Length: 398
Image (cartoon, rainbow, N blue to C red):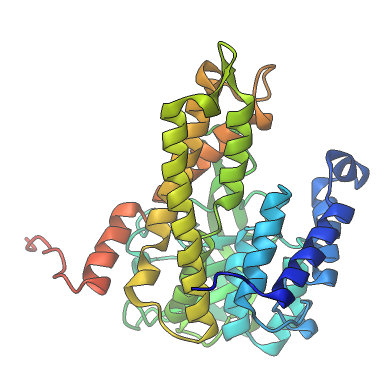
């Protein structure tokens, strides 16, 4: 078995490495840009110019326009992780909406929204869950009634991540009240500054830790053009499942960079003059996490191969979220254990490590085990759709 990438790909690796050595951002570059959002737009634009972000998105939609190449993707991830630099961003716009628009959007929608989304000029949130429609998403009640060429949307969404920071929302609403449960839903793009939208933050166990936030959002006769529907009216359930597929795939993001960050922490942290890396218990836990991380990396390559060949991954695609969310939480748990009593610190206290990254990552990873479909729901999906086991009996009515 030949595991070498070959000369062409090694040349590409050196190209990526040279780019990072020349352009790797530091804290001073962020401060010089004014705001982190402005810096991120500049950084993503530079990456697009060189083909390291939005690489396969067509140029007419603001991307680099390269053909998909599995090994190039792997090499870029490896080199950006090695340099401890984020390649792009994993927010809901680039990872979930953009691939949905590429598959289902109109030409006008693609040209209008994809480029500014990939450059972080527009932030998106996702309007799916409702107080009574979480695991059973198709039972959603937020509705839209026609008013000329517009819809008037009324209802409520909950657990809407970053709604308080976003300029846009992609939202599921019931536009055909007399249609069957799954057939009456439409997928709509909506500006968050439209009159009639009220955002109320939700306090969670993580408090103000990190940049992620949950919200509930209320809609009262919110006017939106019917032209903002993605696909056709009433086909929102099918399009929403495209987005959910990409959401699950985004949660299979390579954990290699997080593992490298953990290794650096274990080499620095000491107890009685002995590094955490020299502790056999910690080292054993690290090795097990590395093995799981490598397994998920190669599983991600398998998923990408299926995508490039336009093949269904079958049951293999159903385990991604379940396994990777737990892996990321377990990685952060080891980091917090390595820090000992300092692992309980946060909010930029004097002795915190990595600017509170691990505490934030731990809470966020734990939340993802629930968000986007709970681990229990994922196990049911794997059992029923993947393994063909019978559905759980429902209690008799009455």
